[in-house]
Image (cartoon, rainbow, N blue to C red):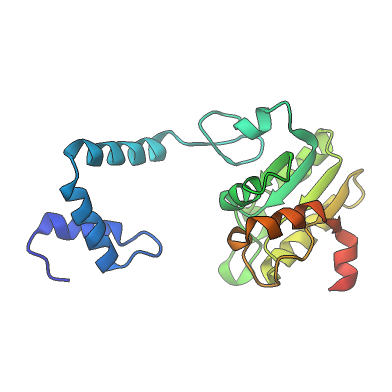
Length: 206
């Protein structure tokens, strides 16, 4: 894209690096910002800079947070004996949007995927196991996307938790096999959480 301004071209290039945004969409967004009051653009850039510099990850569940411990973990109304294991922060947001779950979370930071060079030690699995050993966790819910990588990760964690006094369950397969959790509609995802099944049962049916 040959533009008349190097500054405009640089801005379009940077915006087009965002997922799902091509050069034409990036150009429309940048031109839109140019038409807005200068203060609005400064507020946007300031918010993004503050996000990058000041955002933290909860020391307990690894969710994004403004503080050392996130608001979900410090909420006295949450069931601390219930821990839902998810791949990333987007899955926490997806489950929270259903308003059907009142426990805590544990964000793994990905899924085991040898083809992508991601192994168990690249995730927060060891911290999850330590949490189960140390805290009063009654149930661990596997809520990873029902893909090969998700099922592999579920099974690995299940084996790590064997012998510990904790119940393991997995969300009901209202989510189609191969689908990503974040794209499930709220009703289906909410029902999958409520109708979760013992993890051992999912092994027998697979």
